[in-house]
Length: 71
Image 1 (cartoon, rainbow, N blue to C red):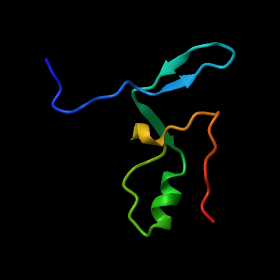
Image 2 (image 1 turned 135 degrees about the horizontal axis):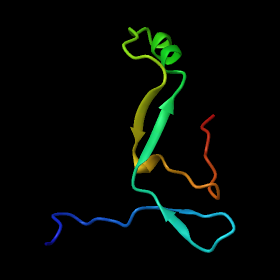
Image 3 (image 1 turned 120 degrees about the vertical axis):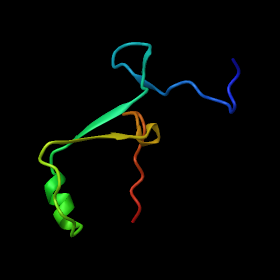
């Protein structure tokens, strides 16, 4: 079966001390400061800690990369 649009291989994170990478297909996160963040935004708290969520693969940044911080 052919894909409707081009797809790419999952990004690889370098395995420290090895010459290979680990394919990343999903990023799962745990928000321990969820309540503080919701209150900071002036919203009502509906969940209890911890709060689980996912991130897009575009959020992935390997340790060999530099995260630019806008000034």
